[in-house]
Length: 395
Image 1 (cartoon, helix red, strand yellow):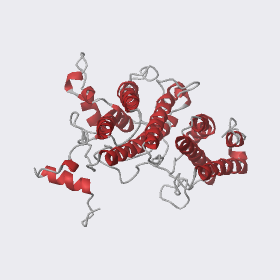
Image 2 (cartoon, helix red, strand yellow; image 1 turned 90 degrees about the horizontal axis):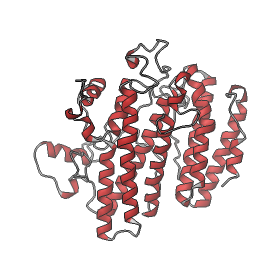
Image 3 (cartoon, helix red, strand yellow; image 1 turned 45 degrees about the vertical axis):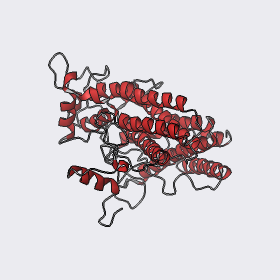
Image 4 (cartoon, helix red, strand yellow; image 1 turned 30 degrees about the horizontal axis):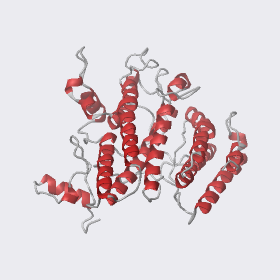
C-alpha cells in the first residue's frame, strides 16, 4: 500500500490514464489483445509465481461460485446440475474441470518450489485480473452473464459474432444484464500472461521443469475454458440449453413463478454466528456449518495432495464433493438456505511439515464426522457419516 491508501497497481493505472509512460515493471504482463493484466515484478520468476497464485485463487473463486449457483437449481434440473453422472455439459462437470485447473496451477507452483494456494480472492479483489467481485448467489441473468463473460474468448464478444438471424450481439446482451461498462478481463487473459511469463522463466534458466509439457497443459486449460465452459454458460444464459429452451424467457420469469429454474437462496450467507448475513435458523445454520466442514475437508485434502505430488488426496477430495457435500447442498435450498462456503480462518497451511499437514487433514475429517453425528436427526437420508473415517484411513 502507498501512503494515501492506493495500491501500486492502482497508481500505475492512474498514471497510464494521465498519459504518463510507466516503467517496464508496470507494463502489461500479457501482450495478447487488450489484456489488462499488469506486471508487478521485473524478475520473471517472481512474476510467474504471482500470476500462478492469482490463477489458483481465481480457479477457486469460480469453482465455488459455480457450485453455489448449481445447487440453487430445482430438482427438475438435476441433469443440468450433473446428476446422475456429471458430464462436461453440466455444472458439476465444469466444476470438476475447474478443480483440475486448480490442481494443475498448484502442482506447477510446487514444481517451482512455491507453496500451493487454497485461498480465495474474496475482498478486495484485483480488478485488473478479475472483472467482478466474488458473490455467492442463485443463478440469474446477472450471475450467468458474469460466468459467460469470465470464460469467454475475446473474439466471442465482438459485434461480428452476432447471429445471422439478426439477434442482439452477445456483448450487448451481457452488458444489458450486468449494467454499465465491463472491465476487459477474461480468465484466458490471465493464462496468456502465465504462458508468456513461463516462456520468460525458461529463457532466463530460472527453473528446472518440463517447460514444453507445462506450456501445452496451460494452453489446454485455456482452451477448455474458452471453448467448453464458455459454450456451456452461454447456452444457459441465453436459455438455449435443451433443459431450458422449452420455456421461452426462462430467466425473465418472476422468482416466485413455479417455472423459474432456481430456488431463491440467500446471497452471500454465512454459517459463522454473529456475522452479517448469518443464517438465523439454528438447524439450518448447523447443516450449513456441516457443509462448511465438508468444504474445508475437501480443500485440506487438495492441499495435502498438491504438497505430496499425490493423486490420492485430490481423488478423495472429489469424493467428498460428490458425496456428503452434495447431499447437504441439495437439501438446503428447498429450505431457504445454502452451503455458504465460508473461508477457513486458519487457512490450509498450519503445519510445519508434510506430516503435520496430514495430521491437520485427518483431524478435520474426524471433526466433520463427529459434528455430523451430533446433528444426525437433521441429516439428509442419503448422508453417510462413515465416509470420513474411510477417507482418513485411505491416505
